[in-house]
Amino acid sequence: MTVAALKAKGTLLQRGDGGGPETFATVAEVTNISGPGLTQEMIDVTSHESADWRDYIPGIADGGELTLDINYIPDLAGHDATAGLLKDFEDQISGTLSTPRNYKIVFTDTSNTEWIFAAWISNFEPSANASGTEKLGATVTLKITGQPTLA
Image (cartoon, rainbow, N blue to C red; front, side, top):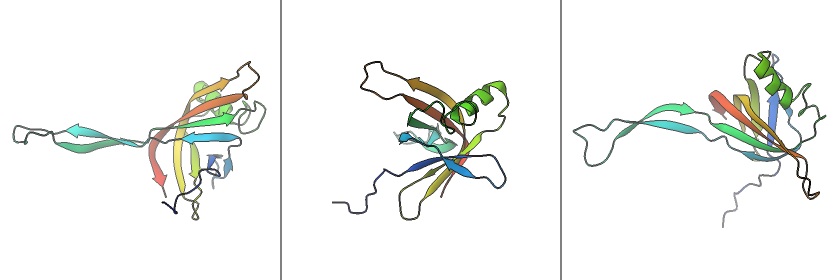
């Protein structure tokens, strides 16, 4: 039995304000954080001298994507179209936001380990089921650009 396992509840996603020094604010009402899916391309270097197995070397790395599920509150500052995630998405399209936003995941370990990365919002998808048994929600996808800091 593992006694060192950690509860995921309490993990935070924080959004940078772009200032110097940068201040991070917690994105409210996050119910699930999935990712980022860190990957590294493998380059096939198999040659005539290789044994009967392919040979590879590591290529370029990719920070992947981070997907958030949120309890979507359209007029909440961290979600809305005036100062939140939706505003960032709109500003990317218009070109007003010309550099990626910095984000931070704060884990629940005793050191509050942080992963910091720059990302663009690649998807913002609200969901509203008329059954009356579901919440107003949204799925937000962040595409990481550049190398994340995995502290």
